[in-house]
Length: 109
Image 1 (tube, rainbow, N blue to C red):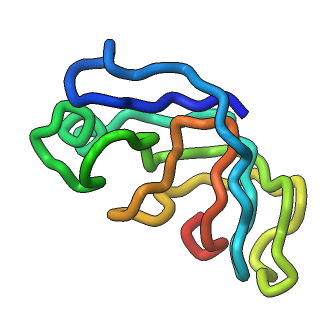
Image 2: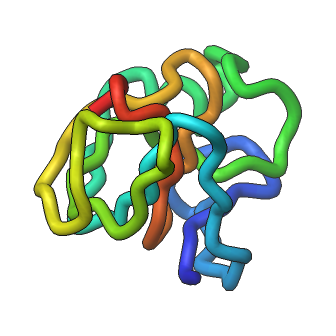
């Protein structure tokens, strides 16, 4: 899958488009094909290094995401494949929203 990643802190120029493996969902998680990810003030602070919430680089930034559920774990009953969802999954842990796919607990959408 395509994803933005950063190997150093700074402005938007530090974001690089790379190929990464599609995330594997865990128990009670859904796999969402991302249609849109937004940039909020926390994203800007994390990317610049002013707020090192995700620790050392490299990492895939982003939390705010919307998309369509592609896979549902047997332990998750909140959504079904094809449902449109949005959320801020896993915050303050890395959600990796600047990517084609996000895996996160269904209750975060």
